[in-house]
Structures are given as structure tokens and as C-alpha cells.
Image (tube, rainbow, N blue to C red; front, side, top):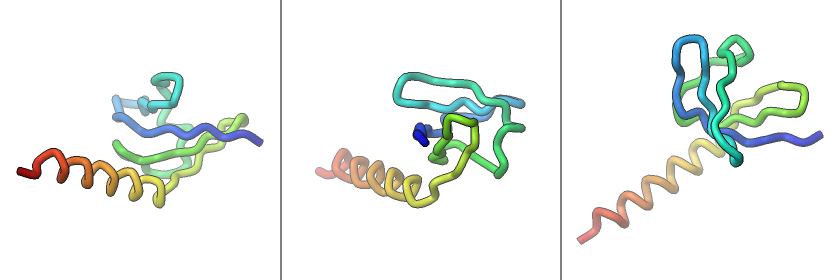
Length: 74
């Protein structure tokens, strides 16, 4: 079974805007079996089942923090 990784960009009303490798997709918020917010990492399989990946979200957050520290170093 193949899964696609997506990152939640934003929530607009009843739509969750998700960034996938091949572009942005709008998914109805009712398709999510859990609470989601901007920055969450999700995996969606070919049947539309969605899982949230807390570890990957934290890894990406740490990566962004490190890049920001490098950017602001004197």
C-alpha cells in the first residue's frame, strides 16, 4: 500500500489545504479523523485514510529552527 506525505498549509473554513510533493490539494476537514493544524504532517493512503505523524512534524520543526538560527547568526 502506498502512502503520500503532506504538510498542512492552512485551514480555510471546511477545507484543509495540504501541500504534497506534486502540489497543493484541498481536502474536506470532515475527512480527517483527528484535529489538525497548520504545520502538521500527514500520510494519506490510496483509500483516503489519513494519519498524523507527530515525529515528522517535530523533525521538520527542529530543522526549520536550525536554519533560522543559521540565518540570524552574526
